[in-house]
Length: 192
Image 1 (cartoon, helix red, strand yellow):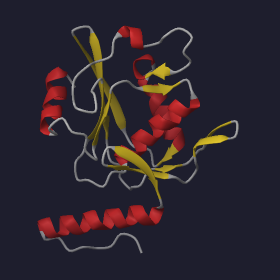
Image 2 (cartoon, one colour; image 1 turned 180 degrees about the vertical axis):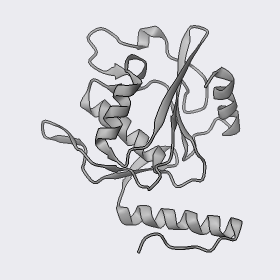
Image 3 (cartoon, one colour; image 1 turned 120 degrees about the vertical axis):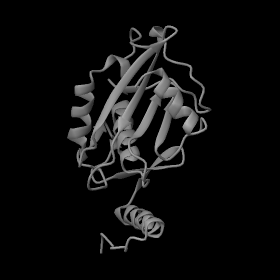
Image 4 (spheres, helix red, strand yellow; image 1 turned 135 degrees about the horizontal axis):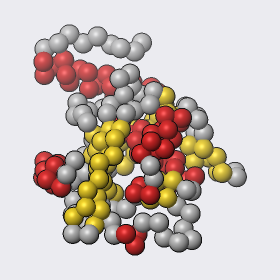
């Protein structure tokens, strides 16, 4: 994805976050267990979104208002900071992190570009073939559990929330009924 594709996507959504697109001014995704867990939750919630749009995106270097601000080198890899920025991480390591904590694991790819000395990224996420992506491995630190086994995350507006399987099934059934009405396809309930 280049700058033109990036800005075209922002124009398409009217610079507003949607269920299928998230904006991040900055994005630390590892080094600290809490950041790692938040990254996994972000990927899961976008992949589990009940929406016909695919692929889905996390755009890095964009304010909540849709302004392109980019990431400067000074924000990446500060000395003494144990957090790992998206730009400091290898994509294959991030994919392994997601694969080892979600089942089924959503496919995603990271596309970066620079403009006027600032860096931007688009994380392109596919919906899982058989939703939902469920947390399959916990992340704990001392007495705090950052990621719980069996949790299901779903994007709601501009945020992410842990959902029960029953709530998520209801959301998917509502979306399937909508598709049935739009395309005159008979609805077959996938879950009992």
